[in-house]
Structures are given as structure tokens and as C-alpha cells.
Length: 486
Ligand code: BG6
Image 1: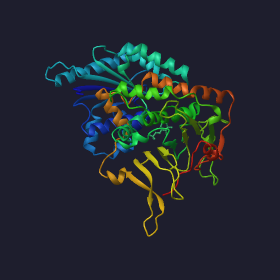
Image 2 (image 1 turned 60 degrees about the horizontal axis):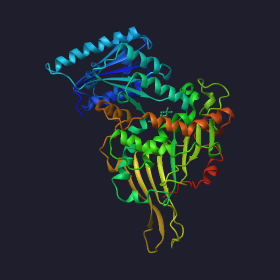
Image 3 (image 1 turned 180 degrees about the vertical axis):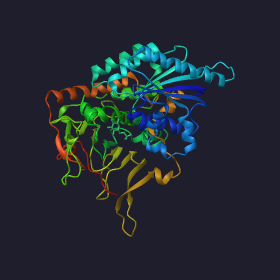
Image 4 (image 1 turned 180 degrees about the horizontal axis):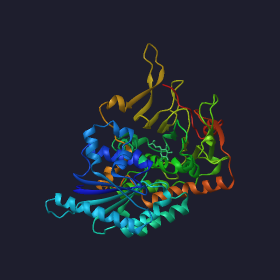
């Protein structure tokens, strides 16, 4: 995977995503010597900014804490140019800037022919301009003779039809191997760990099926509300925001068959195959919630957010159950639970095994394998163990691989850092292919349309609580048991 040189263009460079995620990720790679030796970074957006203003704007709090000389060196590689998103002329100006840099980079190569040069166009813009930007890149700043990589992140439409439309716009402009569709959860350490746990150990695979697994619980709890992001959020709701993408991707890596190889297309084929076995979710298998202010009035409710339309019925919480109708998973409920403004921040995949048949002991709990994706990474296994002492009684205990303890010196990379490196290396295995996106929308679209048609009211739950009343009872019928304490 040798990349000799690269020009990285961040479009929407003056915005929030660029500041919070894209530039910190680029800097993280730069610091670790993982950007190509010859690299230029160009920021593009509509605002008229001086180079100083731009560098100031992308220096987030986090970057400020980095060693100053490194930061200055990084910033000196970053340059800004402003222009409209739908203007071919402006993108031609961008193109000539790219070409100027490329001539410079070539000189750095001592006259060798640079076959390993790449151009990355990273779209950090609002979704409303994805298509105009893509067209402008193609008509103004695209050179078919270099390797181009277009990086783009959700929303990929808001249902099956709009997703198809979106995908076809892009595929009419770029080749599939040029398009990197991000789901940043695929860049998370623990999500990348899942195939290793499953396919590099002998014992899990033997019990990884409906005979031994009772249910799977995928949880995505956040401890904060929309906090000014309500305008975006209200148009999507929690199902589109995290379930149809991040949670479904975690499900895929947990449930997929062993891919033919680790090559991107084999991995994505295995994931898409899981999705094709999931029938659309039924409305009776869903419970919705929306947070309200907490009891002592210190935290606001969802509709108190000024950017949220009054009387909104957009869900900020959802629990739902789906099934994978293949031979491995038939009949195993996959229980997904996601919410904002809840009692804790926790993202995890919990595989709960079946009860031991005819145990000789009382009070035994089910085995579980838990992959905790965030906020702190861990893999742990719930097992029954003898309670130490004179009597032979079992107690639930944990084989615990908490990363902070086990790998205390390791630095876990940010998801965007990991993914950007893969873009540079040309590895698409952690990026979404069209068929995966379509299959994921097929599972959720009938449900979303029915909820909207029927104006289903979410149940209220207090900011900082475990979710709406009745959610536990609702989930219990699918075999969900509250977490047992060790
Ligand atoms: C984003 C969602 O995709 O993921 C947000 O739009 C959510 O609503 C975020 O908060 C969670 O990502 P992370 O990496 O902070 O867990």
C-alpha cells in the first residue's frame, strides 16, 4: 500500500465536522508519521477566510494541547480557498491549486514518475450539497489520470428511494472504487475487533448460533441530548441517526458468516448477506420514546431545544427487535436499544447464551459475551464460577479484558483517524458498499413510513433516565433480561 504523495481536499472545511473530526484525524495521522511524506491539505468552503483565520478555525481545543512545533508544522501544510459548492468555475480554481501543489510534490520526487499519487476529496459539508459538490468535483476538479478518492458520510438518503437516488447520482459520476462511504462505527477499535474474536478463536464459532445463543442485545445509549444539533436530528430521528447505520453495521460484523477472505469485497459481501436475511421490522416490535426535562428541571427536554420544531414527535429513543432468517440465527431475537439523554453513555454488543439444561445448581445466570465499543473499550465474558470458600456454590463472575487495564499503554485511535488511513491506503473493507446500504434501508423503510403515516407518538422519558416506562416489559417478551451484576 505505498502512497508516495497526496493532496487531500476537505470540502466544507470551515464547518463543525471538519473541526471536530476531520482535521483532528488528519493531525493524528500526521503526528504519527502516517500521512504520506509529501502531502498537501486544502480546505474549501464558502466563507471568505484568510489563511490565518482558517488555521485558527481548524485548531480545535484538542489540537491546542498538542506539541506546538508539530501543530505548526501540520498547519503549514494546510491551505484554504473559498468558493461556492455548485460552481464549476470555483472548482476549476480549486483544480489549478491542486495542480500547483502536485507540480511541487513531483519536484520532491526527483523527477520520478509519480504513479502512487492520490487525490482525496473529503466531503464534510451539509448533506444538502453532497450532490452539487460531487458534480462540481467531476466537472471542475477531476483528473481521470490520477487516483481519486471521494469520501462521504451519512446521511445516505432518508429511506430506500432517496438512498437509491443518491447512490445513482454518485455512481454516474465516479467509479465504485473511488467512493469511500463512511460509517464511522466501522472504524472503532472494538468493531474492528469483532471478526478477530470470532474467526481467530476456535471456541466462539462452535457456539455462535441459535442452538446456543438466546438473544443478542445491541445498545447505543448516550448521556446527552441534542444540544443545538436538534435541527439536523429532528429531520432524522434516532432510528435513522444511529440504528439503520451504526447499530446495523455492528450487527453485521457480529452475525456475518466467515468471509471468503479479508478483501473488501468479500467482507462486504458477507455483511450484505446478513442484511438480506432480515425481514422488514414490524411496527409491533418497536417502542419509541422522546426525552423530557428531568424532574428537578436542571436538564432541558428535547422540544425545549430551540432548533427543534414545537410539538415534534421525532423519537430520541427506540427499542426494537429484528430477526435474521438464516440457518445460523433463525429465531434469535436481536434486540436494539438506542437513546439520547439517558442514564449513562454505553455502546455495546451483548451476546446472551441459553440457560444450561438441567443444572445441578440453583441461582445460575446465563453466559454472556460483551464487546463494549464505548466509552471505554472492553471484551468480557460472564461465566459461572465457584464462590471462593467452603461451600460449592456458583457465583456469576467475569473474564475481563478491559483495555485500560490490559493494554494500559496502548493508544486507541479515533475512528476517523483509522478510516482516513484506510482511505489513503486504498482499503475499502471498512466502507459501505451500495448493496449494504440498500439492504439496510429495506429493513427500516416500511417501518419508518408507517410510523410517520400513523403519527406514532413517542413515550416520554426523563432526561438522564433508563428510557420510557414499559420498555423493559416490552423487551422481556423477547427474552431480554436486565443485566445481572457480578
Ligand atoms: C453520529 C450521530 O453518527 O454518531 C450522533 O449522528 C451520535 O447523533 C454519534 O452522537 C455517536 O458517535 P460517537 O463516535 O461519539 O459514539
